[in-house]
Image (cartoon, rainbow, N blue to C red; front, side, top):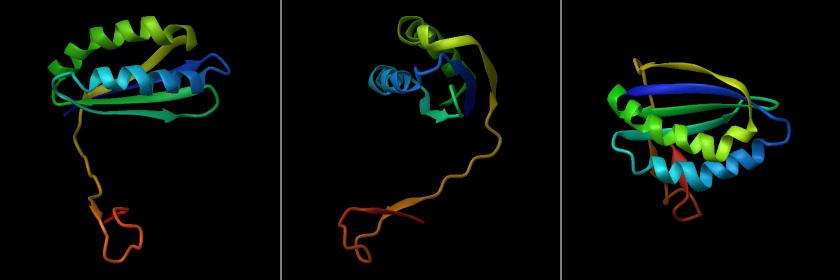
Length: 115
């Protein structure tokens, strides 16, 4: 897997609107990109966000770059102050907790517990 991490400084007061645009338009686009695995937007403090994008391969990440660049130009450029800081590379360690539905011990049917 290949991950790209970008950190952006935002113009004050624009974070919530950027988050809404990401949820409504960017994430649905990325879901159709071959090799796309994950997208996280992290509130990194006052007027800052960090974006973590994960793909199967470097080639998949490169193939998605024109799409995301166009999206940023259309929807996000007016929120961003300065240039982004970027880190990227092969994922060397990963661990996820397994999530299972625990309907026997939980009165809320369908509520999930982390295992």
